[in-house]
Length: 379
Ligand code: SF4
Image (cartoon, rainbow, N blue to C red; front, side, top):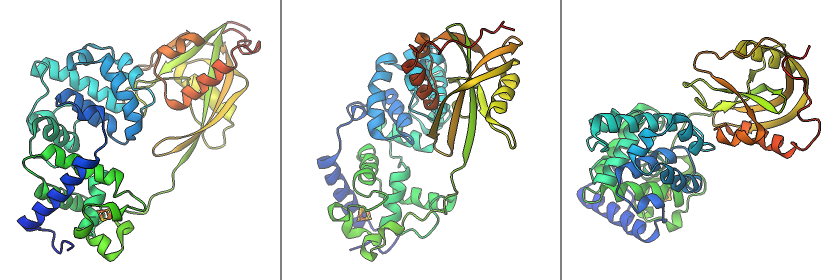
């Protein structure tokens, strides 16, 4: 019988937990991070899994842990190396914060990941969700998690009428999750709810016929599953035109590191930026290189055009082959640059759109004209 209250009785909670955990024990997917109770490894998996598909994390997780098997190994690593192992996962602030937090764990906690909510929340990049996940899964501490999957399942089971993105709704959902949490197996309960959201209570066409919570789900009883969670109308995704310069010096190419804070912070890229109103793409390329590196370039030709979708916007990127007409590149604060050969580009971490450009450079490197742009000191 569907739950007719947002304060379930003890009997209703017991039934909910039993149904959910029985399903989980039989159906949970095998994941490398489910074979460990090492808080560091669970922490890494939870950070990687934020806004990233499980199948993608399955590839990255073992490689990352092979390179950085302990929190000390991560703390002692160079940040560029950490970003290189994160390349392609996106949301690079996660990697920078994880690295910084590992250093804090070593310096302030003797290399042991803290096991109290206050101490773990003090670490860079750990919010309420990650703290609850690590504490419940690694330490069996009774903290409920609330991620997108749990939000969806509980919004449907309780037919929560509030916009799920508001703090009021989030508070109510967190209260429900904590109220339902199985105190003896909090880590498994949290993972079970997330797993059900990922495999059964999916955003569209949920598989209610296979759902262990079907009998208690209000949305299912009313046939309104897909009306929940209630969310505001999404804004149209903005689009930007980006011009970048492939500045050659013989067989060397100029690359620059992005500022630490902000999107794709700390990654390397070919210099460039957004086209401004009324500006041609070639003019945008010249302006950006002058602003970023203090060089005046001549644009030789359009090398490649690609489209790419980031999480909150889309870009069309045009890469122009250029040569320096005047000036010598100067690094801006927090944005060093370097010259590299094509075969060295793999040593640096690049955003995905730049990586596609590198693939095109590699594909065409045997073309006699690829490196023909005049050298920087040509007049
Ligand atoms: S019955 Fe359907 S809508 Fe309700 S929790 Fe299960 S899958 Fe989700």
